[in-house]
Image (cartoon, rainbow, N blue to C red; front, side, top):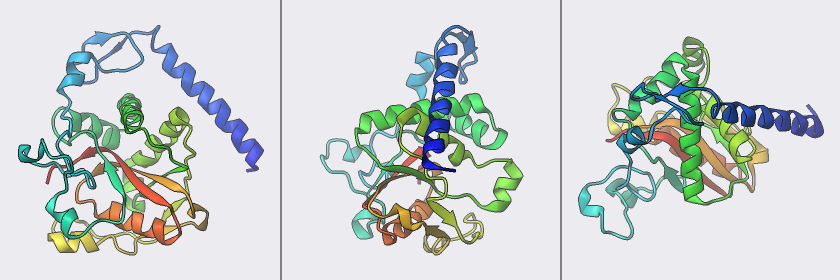
Amino acid sequence: MSTRLFKKVNQWQQKIFYWHRRSRLLLPGMCLICMQPLLGERDLCQPCKRLLPANLICCDWCAESLSSDYAKQQLRICQQCAKTPAAFDKVLAPWLYKNPFNKLVWEFKYTKNLAAGYLLVDLLFDALIEHNQTYDCLVVIPGQKKRIQQRGYHAPSWLAKHLSLLTGIPFLKNGLMRVKDIESQQDLNRKARFLNPKGAFKAMPHIAGKKVLLLDDVITTGASAHWAADELKKQGAASVDVLAAAKTAR
């Protein structure tokens, strides 16, 4: 597809997405947490929004949740990052994978509840506005083929496409490719989990010199994000920040 045609298609997608959002002001909806009726662009009432488990006290690098002892510290660095800094520059994970936010993420990821997906896009957009940084492109951590086939789609790519329409950050669908699937992390120890995704990704040369925003739905160990960022920087990425819908507490 030519650059001119690509821009034209993207402009139409942005217009459709805009009118989809504005139509919610006229049509009744319901809060996806408490299921109470409401009217507005988002399926989330204010009381339930206040119930979302915010990841407020966390490591400034990896977003690992920390104890309240760190609350008054100007620089918050977890022991793992102090010992071995990751390849990414920063993780933005404003919420913890806890009730009721985990149900919202689960509904979107495993049952393809697109209403939940649109709400996650809005919340991610809020996080980016608060972060107040500019990026040249948006890429995702590629999923494993077997899991994509089982679920019918790749949730982070869906989020990235719609977040791109909302922010204007270009989504490079093939900016980062998966070159091998990995074994399940579930039964591995911490060191094995960290090394498991090594060599699983390949970044494209056109990523060189760009400030990259790397998107994933949930970050648990951060190993995949580390090796993905490592590959992006080997291809010349100027910086790599990670954006996640949720962070699993260690």
